Length: 161
Image (tube, rainbow, N blue to C red; front, top):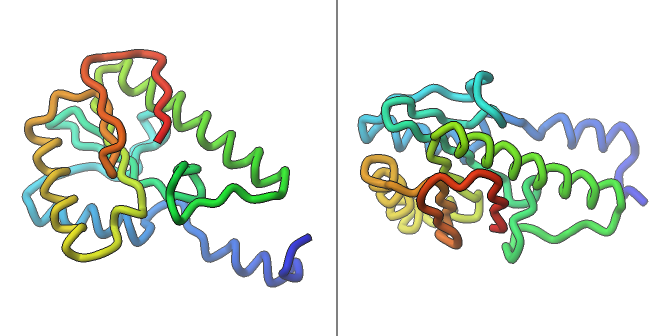
């Protein structure tokens, strides 16, 4: 049972954006200030990555913990409704397919979870680690928080963040 009327629910859902979220904008501004140049939300790549860095052959997804089912995160609690359970599971499956496809195509994939964008001190160290990974990294998949790192090209992987 929804706690909102249909009109209220419509209003609430209209405020949720799929691109140019606060986290994406923060990461993009920080990377730009460090000299990185990129494309955003490029439709040519599976999953339409939030940030594409062609020079480094790397893509970045800035994932919302709720929408992408970040297991073990304080921001994510699996809803009781079957609709939301199915939706989040489908989102996770789609993310896995997109990541595997990008890695198989030779791209390095970096996933940043919204829970890592909190405190300023943590954010500064996150951006520095991200910049280091972009410039020097040899891993095919990296997730921040660094709960998973993969090296080499491993098609068909399924990240469990």
